Image (cartoon, rainbow, N blue to C red):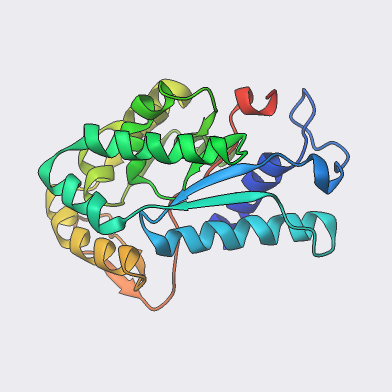
Length: 235
């Protein structure tokens, strides 16, 4: 529930106006909300959650059925996974860039990756577009700071845990130390998260502090959150 609450706060910042102090301002007319391009399909299951939560947050903010302007581009998840297995991340960046170009042509004013792993090539894609791309680390860093924490654990897909794109982002932008799971825990957790999350069969994962294999429960849980960065607020 806390993870969902933070995501809804992010959506409010994303789709609605904020003033220079970061405090909520008066709700704009629906026609003035910014159009966000959602790059989905990596995985489609998380894309559904993003789409649902964004609409729920805007509905709640307006107190009626007002919906935000969204454009969804659905990637071929199988193709992305094949490229990941071959380590062809430049090709993945090129595909994400193409998606960004198409969304921009359709009227998108900002881009959102609806999954954690694409952020591995965030910098490459950002250099190819003049649109702001919202980074998952900003929401995560903000949430961690608001909780008064300075050191946190990290679990996610193989690439999120093994590569440093999230670890470095949190350190450089928020001064937060991030500790990935041990090699043993990563090995036990990886297949579970990739199958359940990427194919829509996700369960909550509880990773014991002593490094034992994670336990699962029959409820869903999201670890990835987003928040609008300052440069988009001014866009």
